[in-house]
Image 1 (spheres, one colour):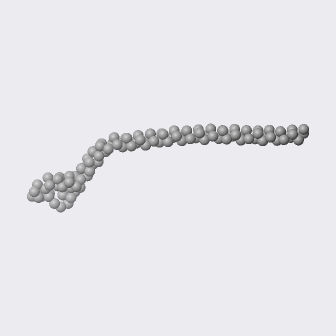
Image 2 (cartoon, rainbow, N blue to C red):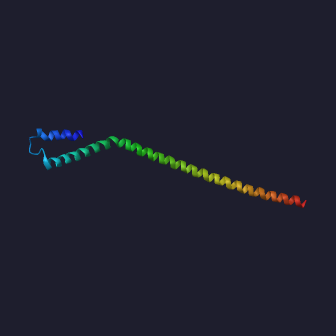
Image 3 (cartoon, rainbow, N blue to C red):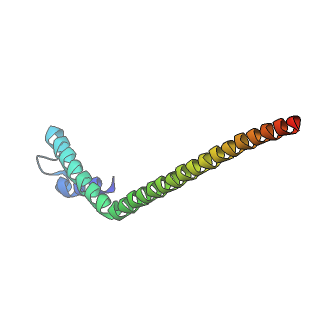
Length: 108
């Protein structure tokens, strides 16, 4: 990582100080990397937050549109069921009328 190598070179002071190696150095490198990773994550979040909000809004809008379309489809289905029931009733009435007409012709 380019940041850690830059910081490492600043900490080394040419490799002459007593803390330039060993366990202390590894621990310090780990701490610096954690801090830098946190800072970079915070920057990335701040940079991408508008995109995340836009994506969340797009998802919410899409879901709302889908719910609206689903509602419209449900209403259309109910309307078609009503029309089908009316058509069935009309067919039953027509059949009854045909039976009555047939009975009348037999009587005459």
